[in-house]
Length: 168
Image (cartoon, rainbow, N blue to C red):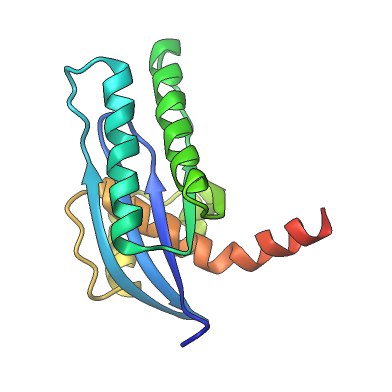
């Protein structure tokens, strides 16, 4: 049982922030929980960011993950949207780190490749593979499924990250 690592995967977003928690024991993965944080759309940016911080803090305290994983976001929208998403991503990266968790970051293509086998998988393929890899998985949105995929990616690549940290 000492090899079990609980991982929270987070798919950053200012409108919908997906989260998913799994346990990894070697090659075995187990679903724990998943959901979506939805800050009020009409609120001022500072309060929407505070909502994300408070929501993630509550989740981390409730589920007690050992590590966190966050997707690197790719934005091809306007500069304002990119800036706001970057601020949300900052909160998503900072919150687990401030609570003492190591945080891994993964490109979307690596997440897709780790779960589906190809870096250009669509949302439906990701959701199907999440159900295959985690049969008990219960998620309420594509954002929650993406967060579970991020957690799975971290489970597969976390040793690589630790080896890099030791060499640095």
